[in-house]
Image (cartoon, rainbow, N blue to C red; front, side):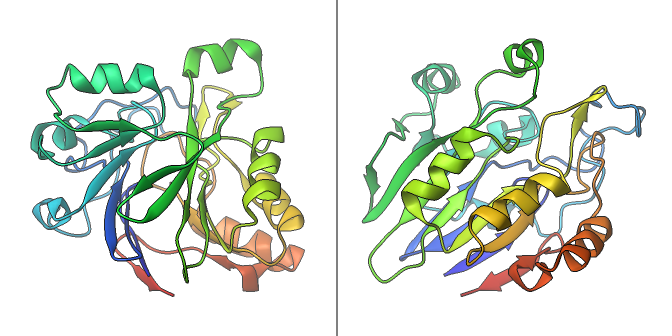
Amino acid sequence: MKIQQLVNATIRLQYAGVTFLIDPMLGPKGSSEAYPSLEHPNQRNPIVDQPVPVEQLLDYDALIVTHLSSDHFDAKAIEIAPREKPLLALSAQDAWALARLEFLDIRVIGEDTVFEGVHLARTEGRKGSTAYMIRQMGKSGGAVFRAPQQKTIYLTGDTLWFDGVRRALDTYHPDIIIANCGGNRMGKEQVVMGREDVLRLHQHAPDALIIASHMEAVNHWTLSRQDLRTYALSKGFSDQLLIPENGEVMEF
């Protein structure tokens, strides 16, 4: 199994002989508009360069898009993603929108969707802590990957810690958790996990290895890699946390 961290939430996952490209943000630095941010209001996205040539990333078996935010499926990815390859979405609503972009093989991940021997299950997400922000941000979620003789992976997607995340941990008992944890805020309200959320992940699943994703790539981030590393050390779970740089490949 190989997990490559790319820009923001973009992950290249080689799992049980299947290659997934997840949440591709493939445009060059500064190619997308800024998000509302108190910290970095004038930085266009992404705020970092791509670590590898994007053409190399198109050699995949399936594309997974957790939701249709521009930092998870940007204009460049929409432009160059092969229309004939399978595209896996988390909702019928997203699948309908993707069909309008002329993707030809769209599938919706349910409670147990099998793709080339890999069992996929949709998990819940919640972006924001107030009813207003949750409505504004729309549905999000993640996915669990399972296969014989493979570690179980839980990809949280964009979410804060809430009961839906707890249920996913209790149901699937993942060995590896890929957590979107840049502490991203829309204005004043946090919409993606911060350091306390990551601590809760660890406390609820102490044996799981947490991989920190979605960091220092879009202008509304508030949690740096170094700050998370320091916090994990102070709370005693740094041995269960990996914080990869963009382009880094982890093999298990």
